[in-house]
Length: 366
Ligand code: F6P
Image 1 (cartoon, rainbow, N blue to C red):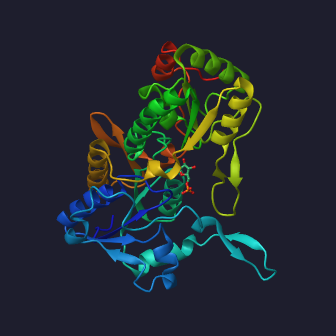
Image 2 (cartoon, rainbow, N blue to C red):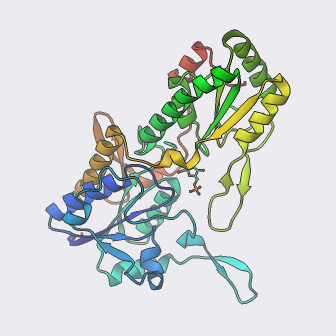
Image 3 (tube, rainbow, N blue to C red):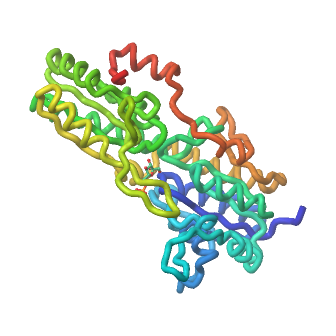
């Protein structure tokens, strides 16, 4: 196998707190191996759409550049969740939007810049792309990122702990205003395919009902349960994941666009108006949305991200390829990218966490 002299790092998909800590962990470890490190701006854009970057599509990653970035949210490299290079939306001669595979241009960019290996930090979409890049001949190690925690084969993704902590604190704050007005408060949190954020924050912050994609809800049952709780304690709190759906219904989609996943939203508002109608109790909604992705990572996420970054370099140095670093307490191990991106990690409905919620009297609207 060719000796590694230079690696690239990229961040793809929605940002998550801890991205910069992974970049730092990987950069310092790689520099300590004597490797050169560059970051690709905005996913793969910096390497195959270089003309859009007057300052250069690649960022030199030095000790100085990454020294202070551990506590920063976002990503110094930028990211994107549109314009998948394997199905890049472009206009044809007739002016129609068609999807073109531009991955050869990425491979060409790697060759031109003498990049020997890639550390791809991303969720299911970005890591599936990384897996395809690997199959085209690039040495690749993936790092699991997403606030939604829906990536398989790792106990947890970085970013999730920060998002859940913020959601918990936000729901805590709603108790007093809900109590003061005798209202039902509905809090919508992110979670497209999996209800981890809603479940963990809802239980931790004493919600009365939690609606998650894994357990389609019956709004009549949710309302009956909230009416009873409101009559007992004077108010009620509902946490709903953006990907939750009614029994015999569909997820709430706000936008469909070529080259990217459909944008979800609206379930919180719909549940709010239905509950108010069915219970006759004043009901208000709050959408936490992108607030969950912002801010400084928690200590847990900082440490996990630094460990993931360092482990990614350790894996490359050991000759690993086509793998993702994964948390398997007490250690970080390696799993094939293929397996990690094969299916979503949803909340097991028979898990002890769901059982705990039921035992605490939390309603899922089943
Ligand atoms: O990171 C995943 C996620 O947070 C999903 O829960 C959500 O649907 C999506 O990102 C929204 O991303 P954006 O609004 O940036 O397109």
